[in-house]
Image 1 (cartoon, helix red, strand yellow):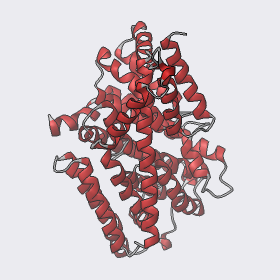
Image 2: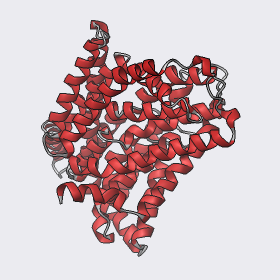
Image 3: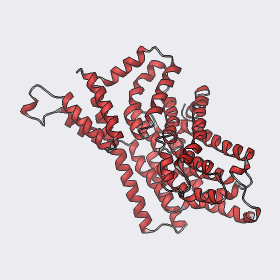
Image 4: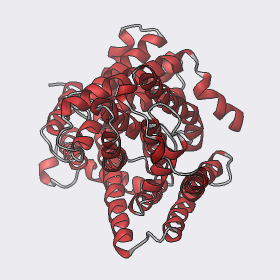
Length: 448
């Protein structure tokens, strides 16, 4: 068996192990060490079984991850989001946006999407957003007479916006892997994220306008006075919006690094929780534990993936796949379609972390051959990865929602409600390819 064949076996075995349910980070580490031991073995290996370069590589990768300045922003943004979630600030936000959008068709769906977009900006954790909105917005929408498929699809689609809208954790991870500036990546993702959220809202308003039975309007007597609506907006939406704009503005204007801005955001989240009298010792402890657990997962994923990728490349896996793709003599459009199709299919059995850390680096060295900007490619991938949460039968957003939904909401109802949003994501990818200025204009304007 040649080394490249061993590398392909290594990749296939990893996918099988993940689909069997083994922990991803430790599967990567175990396979990287196991196959690396084979790859770096010397003729006199049995004389000293611990004298193998794979152990040095593993230690170096661990040190590199822990000393990576870009990744410092991950736990800080996570802490900001978990504090906002645990302090029930999102409840206030949804209620105020629902009142503000009361004259629109499907006003509660619009408010749910807007809340998801804002909350996704604060946390970027898909499971947290979908679960919280499933507990908060779905019962209210069903009680108001909304169609089950329409309501559940809206929440699942809105919850995935955290992958794309800055300060997305996924964008930080991609920036570290592709060795890009996370600031430029945030600037590139801003317009596409707003565009996708806007298209979602246009869809729900249009569906409800032509079919009012899907989303009945609230009775007039249930609408509070205008002064109460304004007060709700001022006390719930405005503070959180100002905090998020300050964090993003500081990053995009070059006033602060992502890590520094994330630190300010964490402090701002704590300050808001104190002002709302919602910060208790129990909630603070829960936020810290969740932040530590998720941060540890991300860091160990990096350690495992870099070890795995180093061994895979040393065995000739990257070169073999690159030769296979280049032998097709694809055009840049053909290459993008192939890459995005593979990522789309990988989204069924795998989550975005494995796709970004393991499989995207396979495509990155080929971008120069096809004249593709890695910044543009990253935003396309971020859009595409939303489909991994929305594509049955492995649509994780649907399973997150089903876990907290009322018993009368079946999984097939959620799947049917998701499908129109999946089409909107694919349409956005086509739109972005034909109008690349949506991605490239703001980074060029801000940074040249």
